[in-house]
Length: 326
Image (cartoon, rainbow, N blue to C red; front, side):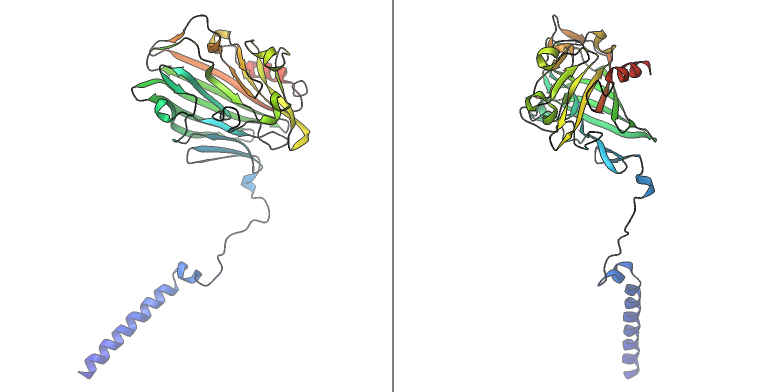
């Protein structure tokens, strides 16, 4: 009897020793009572040099030398995908507003429309009234000067799916004074579309407050028109805003849209506002309804230019001609 009890005790002792030995070799157990050994980097890592891109949870972030220069947001909770923040090449301050008064639903640079076949794909009035939903988002290529990414979207609400689109974006950093974002939208009508008038239509921008005329900035187009009075309803190769930065008054920066002459058959007056909004779209100036038949396609091409200095100093006309010839 005693021998059996002794054997049982020894077996239990060996089992306990074995278990303790296993725990002692476990990385988690070894870390208990000790400081975590996170890896530090006293110098920039080589892969942070130049242009880099990062995609996560419906967003793409573009950096230069590890500093953010552009972002694209396409989460499923959003009314529509949009570009923001787009940071000034010199100041690092955003040249677009993600929300500002008045009309806080304006988001950076976006594509939308209201009204569209009874839906609203523009305002913050609930996704049930209309949503441009991201179906696919992918970084395609990153080089020393370019980051390109693509997206597929569907325009939807209950009982209606008026449009689908394919998007191509290329972020180009030609130097320290400029940043270009080339945008191409290929839209397909999934049902007949007819728009009698829509001041809220397609490609649009909400500029940062400090470069908007209502806060001391300047609204200008390629023809030299100034302010809403000189740009609204007028055709132009490009149009946008510039001015000294609120927190860097020594720096003058701006942002413009460049409109491709093929867009809307070459007749594209601009919708502009002093508070920092603009859109190159003819749909606010129609004399008869604009229509697309089911299956019809619409291609729109734009270049967004972020620049340092005045439009003349930034040579925007030269950049526009180079874009068209390229």
